[in-house]
Length: 205
Image (tube, rainbow, N blue to C red; front, side, top):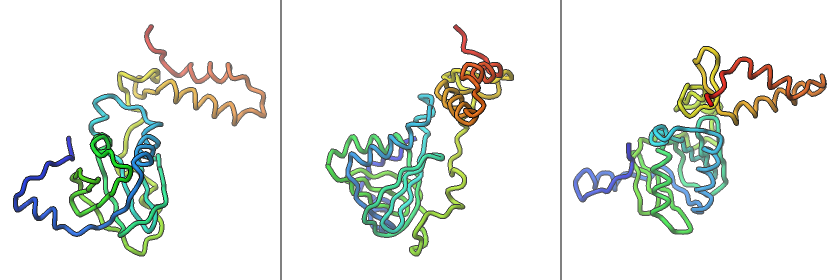
């Protein structure tokens, strides 16, 4: 589903253009791209999921937060107004391909988000202007939950009941975490691997 809109000169278009700006800020194009890559880097998605993936954007006083599930990227910048919105990840990346300027001016209205000359459509929620930090109640749970353990064809390992799937990177990360936690007991990594793998189905050769 695409958010990008090529607006025609209609009454509806005029109404969108005349909407007041709820929040705005400027960000270097390279930092914008780095923010998007940083929040997506830990997540493995199928090609199909990539088209419906959305991230949350929060603008508060002199701070902006990019958030994708539990992954966050903060940066300090001069901001005008406060708000929160959600955007399709792929659409924003496509917009950055179109806008080659060094600076990306982000103007967020009630129904549209402008990235230089590109407009994306998305509902926006105004935040209390007195907000200095994103409320913990908002950050405690993803607005767009994603099941990281869903069984998908691209997963490398599965539980014995085939109800959960895991990437090899996730399993390796957990092995390192357990090994670090049990280091004082001098438990070999191979023993930890055997224990965890005993509860997993290996990929077919």
